[in-house]
Amino acid sequence: MKAIVQDRYGPADRLRLTDVETPTPGTGQVLVEVRAAGVDPGIWHVMTGLPYAVRLGYGLRRPRHRVPGMDLAGVVTAVGPGVTTFTRGDEVYGTGTGSFAEYAVAPAGRLAPKPAGPTFAEAAAVPISGQTALTAVRDAARVRPGHRVLVIGAGGGVGSYAVQLARAAGAHVTGLCGPTKLDLVRALGAHDVVDYTRHDLPDQRYDVVIDTAGNRPLSRLRRIIPPKGTLVLVGGEARDGRWLQGFDRQLRALALSPFVGQRLVPLVATQSTANLAALTEHIEAGQVRPVVERTFPLTEAAAAIRHVKAGHTSGKVVIAS
Image 1 (cartoon, rainbow, N blue to C red):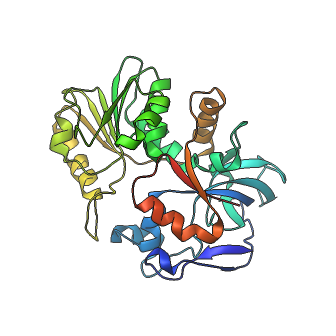
Image 2: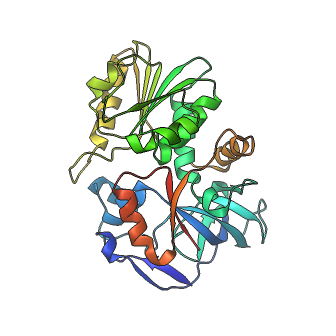
Image 3: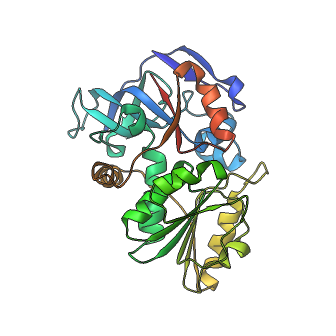
């Protein structure tokens, strides 16, 4: 099969398209013919091995998995021992290993039937960003009707889902984003939109702040939540540094939270069939829609990653066949 591979950590120039063996699903796994694969900032971290802390999970000296990519949507072609939830021909979406390829293996527990309505490309834009936003809104922030919620980075991959999920939960949602994304964020359901080039942060308080941008000091963010408010930190893309980059802010929040009244929550997103099923309900009810800014062919995977790394994507970028 055709696949994008990398043998060493480094820039996107080290990715190459070549022929590799089609993987075989093991116990509890499913082989999926990939129709589309999502691209998110995490792909860049795994590709470059930066910050160095990433290598603890993905290989100290070189990537443990030669084929990058996790988000996928496609058709089941084979199932491994013990899999009873899917059969050949099922249309699915979720996360697996090596989705920048014609075929990829995924744990059955991280797949779900593809939602009715969205294309494969749209479905592939959901799993990681959608589940991250779901975990942030539902589990970490515990958003309830009447809450005032600020989503920072509201026009990006996670932010676009967070806006919609918070609105579906009954919150009054404000989206902070760049000037080119204001109309999109408003169309996604935000009651108010704020251009960060004019106002770094709105001059008011919110019950919940979900920060997907990762570049504002904790002290500044804490000023806009009340004494019992909640701050959820998603990622850390904007800081330099080879060891932790922006993730040092999450560690400081974890250390500080027990000593203040505010809840400062470094997000740890979970991926599961149950979470995907919850997202499917929202999608099929018309409460959430995937936003795909652009699709790239598999041959241009490196360009897709560079585009996402530039940091100005509206919604998601997808590699589609």
